[in-house]
Amino acid sequence: MSDPTIVNLGKISGTNLREVLDAIAGAARTKAEAEAPKRTVAEDIAALEAAAERYVAPCPFKPRDLVTPRADGSMKGAGRPHIVLEVIGEAPCCIEPVANGNPSSPDFGKRLDMRVAETCACGHGEISAYWVESWEFERYTPPAETGEQAPVAPLDGTILGSAA
View 1 (cartoon, helix red, strand yellow):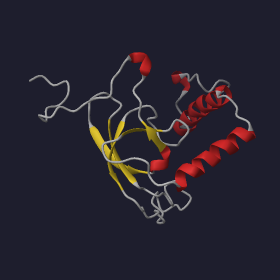
View 2 (tube, rainbow, N blue to C red):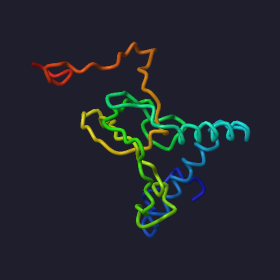
View 3 (tube, one colour):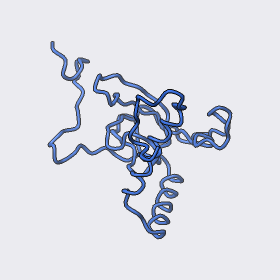
């Protein structure tokens, strides 16, 4: 297959579908990596030092704060609002292998010190809550260019945007 992004479905029989999907994903990943801006080693070191400072600092958030995953972190959803539900002062590290018993998993050793909730990105409004590492988050600021305002929950318990 000379161009892994083009698949001739008429000739796919006998082809390992996993190989086809891996080739497509690999091409997309390679293109994204090629288009990504390159940072210098000095910029990487500065980013790592800033991450280390956030990691060792106490959680700067409190319940009901609006936060969002940092764009330079591993959490998905940067720029989307999350609300802090709970903060643990001295969270224990997760030193049990959690992902298929693999201690090289990124989850191994996480210090889950903050519980957040978010609405799903699909737009249906489902809310999910989960534990995270606070150092991977920053305060949420509504986008200025849209004029969007931070939501304020009504005191009567109704859902924002619902018809009465």
